[in-house]
Amino acid sequence: MTNRRAEFRALHHAGRPLLLPNAWDHASAAALAARGHRAIGTTSLGVAAAAGRPDGTGATAAETLALARRLRTLPVLLSVDVEAGFSADPAAVAEYVAELAGLGVVGINLEDGRTDGTLADLADVADKVAAVKAAVPDLFVNARTDTWWLGVDDPLPQTLARARAYQAAGADGIFVPGIVDLATLRVLTQRIDAPLNALYQPGGPGLDDLGRAGVARVSTGSLLFRAALAAALAVADGVRAGGLDVLDGLPSYAEVQGLAPAGGD
View 1 (tube, one colour):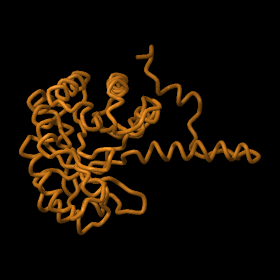
View 2 (cartoon, helix red, strand yellow):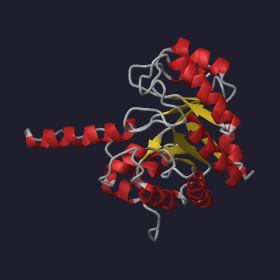
View 3 (cartoon, helix red, strand yellow):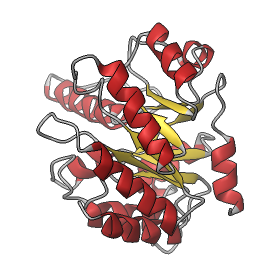
């Protein structure tokens, strides 16, 4: 196991969760790194929307790989959201992830939700996990199940069954987005023998409460990208309405320029 991958794995503590903010381009990742975040994830929605493509449809394999290549110079541990692996073929998924690993990526997020609102076949997802782990054994595979996110009937048994299957295939962590109920999260952390990843949601539990529920990792998902988009719209509306006062905390031109690596990619 490389030192970077071992370091990333060690950041997952039940009770003291890793906050994993999700970036969508070099500037957002570099700014988060400058704020002291040692580990950063990517957001598939942010990457897809920035490229003018839909999320979750397997349309951004090239963009995701290009982003990982741009981020390899940053002093961060990078986990990449690969949607469902950008292929139905486990061997092709493993080949793609191995290319990411060659760029220094320490983990991936692999999901089982489909854009039609259904879950992918459990065995098919497990086969992808197994293929990735065979290709890059020490990569942290965070297997995401969208049982709650998609609102399936009686999600707990399905979540536990999928978690067991993905763990048996080699998954290192289990991600169950869509839950804000701490009692439910406690049940999952008690019954899933792997680091549990929760999605932070505004108005939901904070890091301390999630940690007390046994959560080991908290992702922001697309929240930062959507917040940045909302801020841009608010500023544009303010200018159109007659102007704005000085915006507190707004990075200067020079500060943003300084986020770019010397000499480009």
